[in-house]
Length: 340
Image 1 (spheres, one colour):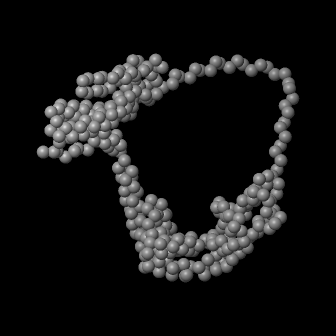
Image 2 (cartoon, helix red, strand yellow):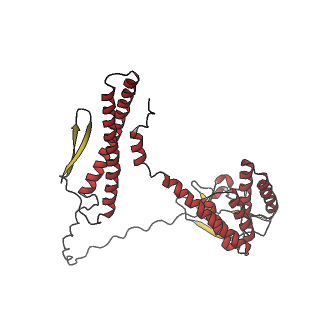
Image 3 (cartoon, rainbow, N blue to C red):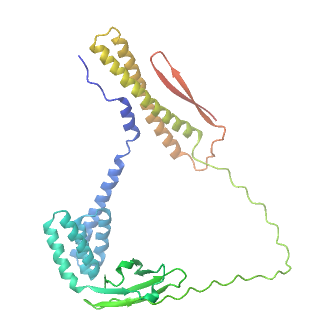
């Protein structure tokens, strides 16, 4: 009876070498769990009437897992904290997301909040007169760059004091603290012409005077020889892991080809089908040995590297690793030997 063809053993070697990939998913799961914990803590603080403590929890949760529900809670928290402009911007973003995600209930909630907060916004209009608009001028509000396209347009701001600043090449930096206007009002702020930056002071030329010769400095202490954790055992183990991996791939390909030849001979009842079966089996055993050697050598190399003391001297330049082929009538392999 014809047996089911097994998977090429070279693939098993690949899975053994690259089996650390699930760690990425594990890290993402940890972020999601932490985001949920922060979200629940934010809700608890909001229920206790502590928005100033709850808002950072929601903000950190949103960084880890940017869910629409978290964004709505963050916006609600900022509204309760009195940061109307920030809440309005977050509700506006939530409205766009809810429409894209076909969530009518949340879209309706965000839309009502945007409509309610819009008339309450405080705004700055930042203008740059022609005499102040020098090449390379950069305007910032609270450290955030105000693009030239936004000059002359209303910029919503939260209550409190804000820093308006301007810089340009060859000019002195200008900055001024401005309080936010009253609720639902707009205030125009003009950038003044920047002053030239002060010229650097000329270098002072010291007058040569006779002075005693400084004492001779002691010779520098020679630096210690280069040290490394790549000890000879680590190099040998790592080289063996690489060679075993190459051997696993090569013998896996040979095994797949030999097994295919055996199946063909078996189907045709060829007289040499038993020989082909033995040859395929031998290659399969060699392949498994290579896979096991690759996994064990890699693990040994990592262990030796991790446990090596930090002050181990690097191996001498004369150290080398040689690869010696081993060939037989029906099998083949590689052997690594080193000299240190």
